[in-house]
Length: 262
Image (tube, rainbow, N blue to C red):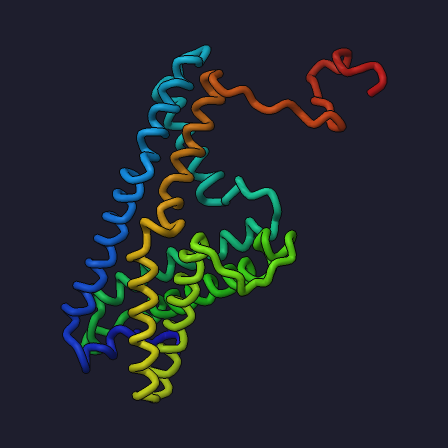
């Protein structure tokens, strides 16, 4: 199951161009939905206005080299390692979901466009990464949904309580879960149920990529930009770093500057 390309088997019942067109439409929906979200909520205007105001209060100019360094730090810390999350559980859950989703989406595109038929079989590593990516999303996503969410873990609400903000994570979990079930049934040769779960898989993906204006999907594009702007603001002096906690005084290079009772 883990090394077979489930999309190649579809070529027996539909043209590969249909699958490829569907993927292109989903990409278009993400782009259009993100742009609509930006224009409707005026988040980009607010972001750049806030950046200009902060820059005018800065005490020094940030050069191009330092700007590039800050961008690299943002990519390595906030984006690749999700350092903005305070608790280890939330951070691990997010990383599992994020990297699983990336593997899942990238390998889907590779199989649909590069190896759409059994005539040109995909290297075993590609479908393997697709299945592993889906499993990582399941582990990170279900862990978050049932055990880490604030309204569940701290407020004691039911894990089955759903609000609009949950649309992204629920549609993502539905996509990967139904995709895994569809792949398993296809490998097992259960044709009728395979068709049923493939239809559900398509619906889940349409909701996931088509609901960008109403879900938190677009946040994955905004958060790195906000993290970068924060680093720039700290570098040019327009944003002061928070002081050390009262019970943890700063450590100075010169020990004579420490409080006498330290």
